[in-house]
Image (cartoon, rainbow, N blue to C red; front, side, top):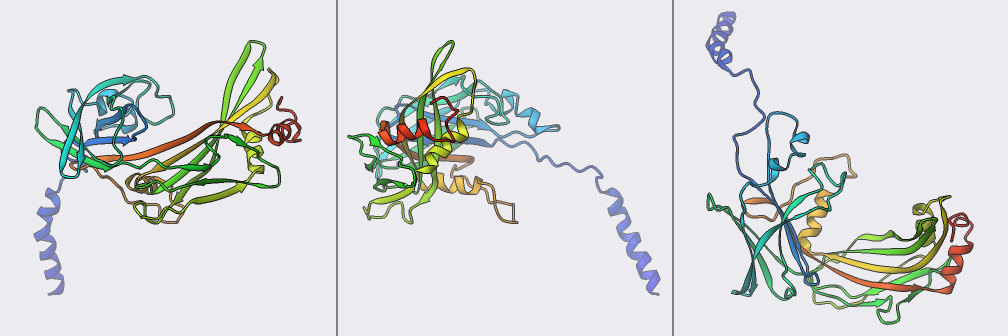
Length: 333
């Protein structure tokens, strides 16, 4: 009797199993998904927003990515940036399109060097206001949107923005001191070392970037505290960076150290979150959550602020060390 019941169950489900589609379709039905990436900063005179569309099809997606039409909308979108003070709209900008030609091979898997972006020479943005992005698809009337506040400007005490002088004394530490930026969550400092190379064809200006720190975060980006932030680092790292990035070149007759720039960059909270979920995982769990703050789309619309102390003169100790350091003796300084 038990065997008869088993046979009956198999016979009942056999037509169902037989009628299943044996082809697995991993692609869903087509759906228009807008991809948006844009960062605002009140100390930049032009706003650029990258707007593309998601794509998927039968074949190699890596090859599709190299074709501009795969991710570029065929029709111009209505892109508007609104400035709001509380519940009052102060003004708005209508963004136009421009093709930029500076994308390099290897920057990403997508096509290059031409990139279609939306832009507007916004001039001075008000750091106390909120900015709303609205993207309207003219054919369908669908609207994608996002909003962001701005990272406020902030002061730097060391290096002194008026004296502009630094010495990286071997065996000692050097300091940077700055105040937190309202609305800023994550801080980065790059020290850019400028130098000149003399060859048989002339003198060429070059530079090396030293990423001093990239993930310093404050607990509350909107906190009322105004305590100065002070961080110190080994001066010896400066010479290590030069050694690792400037190689021996027999075509170079001589090299001359010039100056350094201190480039402080501050990311808003949404930008910091996006960076955190995009960074490689160091744990055994490799799956990372996705992050987007675009309503009806995917991507990021946030803000940052860059404060740069440029042409900081190098002290005598630093200039002498570059010339006499045994690790740099064959670099031509």
